[in-house]
Length: 636
Image (tube, rainbow, N blue to C red; front, side, top):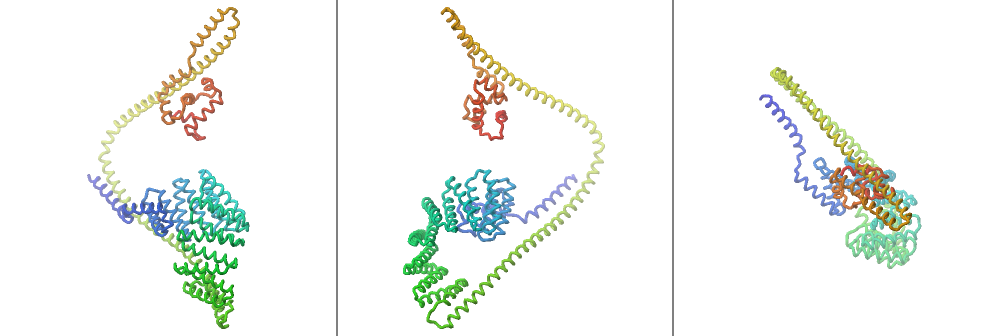
């Protein structure tokens, strides 16, 4: 009684210890499910594009609940989303860390598809970070997986990624090679959207190689595809690119045509920024053409759009463009006014690059102003240039310091976590060791006293128990031997029946063949009888012999086989209903492990025909090359 009370007390202490530890991590299950549901909804609604901050918040919450969730695939999806959003924010180290954790989880699940996806995301991050060699290594690694998975669409994406790496490294021949391979795959998979994107990339490569005709050809194809699938946004970008291409090659009329189409399309889509960009490019085209009136109108439209939508950068660029037009027309005063207005706006937006460019133009402008004003402009230009250089140097130093401090903090946090973990482990080890020491001492005392009181009774019962156990062991061994013998006899009996079936079927088939050969040979002697009556009698005898032996050995085989293996045909047809009756018979022969020549003899077919039938059976059973047909049929 005391012993039981003591054990209850010990278990109560253990519950207290575990309860104290779990109370720290207590989380409301209902709240967990709300986060999971919200995250799944964010995936379906593409929240990552419309509201990336909210998408990041939900994904990080799901990642934080990874220890509480049973759905590892959901955790991988959340980790990937966090990594992608970190990459978009150019937080490359954080993105790589998240992708590494996601990849480790995918490897632990042996999830090949997710492994391929995460490797592709890591490659994209390396491209964003301009680490093209690392990106290529990742892409080649994921390509091996996609080749094994026969995933042509993702394989094409891998080729496209390699093309981007070489494009940014200005290795245009290699870039073109991989873009063209990706194009072939996308054409075969009928992925029109990605095909149009690759065509645009190929056009960019040819543009860099100064092969403008080829560049126009591929860009025109991209326009046709995006127009056919109603991909208005990409279509607009293609039209803008084609217009700029015509502008750079001196085909200004075509440039004006396509840029105007781009502007009209963006106006229909209410994309104000793109309308401003289109008018700005159109104005520069008119300047190249020498049509300064149209250029001024387009620049004024840019200024109006920018002013209405409070886009200061657009206002500054349009004012600089208008000033350039007035300067070309020798209207120096008007040009100076535009430059001064642009300078005032650039100062308000604190854009030193714009200020530097405008001050330089004002310094060059020959207007009726004092020489001191020109000196002031150039002096301010020099001051801003020096300030920008210092700012760039300071930014680089701060960036290096930030990276250093971040790495330092990571190391310090890791060391602190390890130190705290060691301290916690030491405390728990001391508590557990003390508890186990006390428990062991008490148990030894109780066990010793109890053993002393029960020792005599145990000694008396030990002999009887040993005798009983020996008898049970003997009986058990005897029963096991009998069962083993019966099982071996049953297996042997089954094998004997199978051998008997094979032997009888083969013997009967051979006898039938011999009988038919004898009949054929006797038919030769029919014409040797002189009398017609004798010939007719002889033919009747042969006919009677053929009729008496017109028994199909396969029918007899099926009856005997069904008695030995009842239900074989039924089970096989239930799982593979498209197997024909003749193929069922071949399955029975193969089930008995008969040789090919024997099956061919019984079925009266050639070995080649039998191999064809075997191939059809394997195909209908959907067996792989490493699966044995005989072994699979023995399961039925």
